[in-house]
Image (tube, rainbow over all chains, first blue to last red; front, side):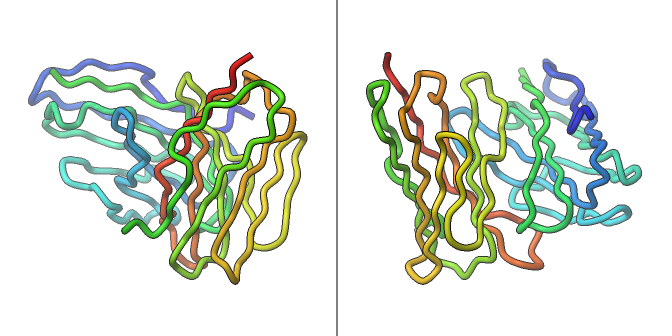
Length: 113
Length: 109
């Protein structure tokens, strides 16, 4: 089992460019999450998907969109990147809600210049 | 005031020492998570507990629901234990965890 995979691992964008971060899990989990972690800071929830076909905003959703493509895949899109979105992005999944263990992907390090 | 508070923020110890990291929370929870973030950035779940105590190798996690407090202990600490340790509170039927700020642990040889 690969667990949670994310692509790409690194990305540099210019201000205004768009990109999609991909995430997939092979554990048959219902819930998936996107977090961002700024340097020296804790994790902040961007969006989550409780189950296939549903998505909800987290703590910091502005500037992002998500798609739960199927049970395995959950993508995060930046439509017009801004320097404030420079961060490390983590995808995670869990069997169901927050009382269940979360499994994290390796992260995507994004720099917006 | 954060709903989940960790202490200490930073901890440096010598190899072999017994380590304790504390997590206090102010909300009613169903589960308390402990995670480890390696210097390379990867995040691994260590424990999820709702009562009592759990042990995995040299790591022990305890929780006192009445006192709203959890501790993570590391016995016979080793430089490879150097990492950021994070606690997070989860509530039943809620998809969002409430995250602590993390404790940066450095174990010197």
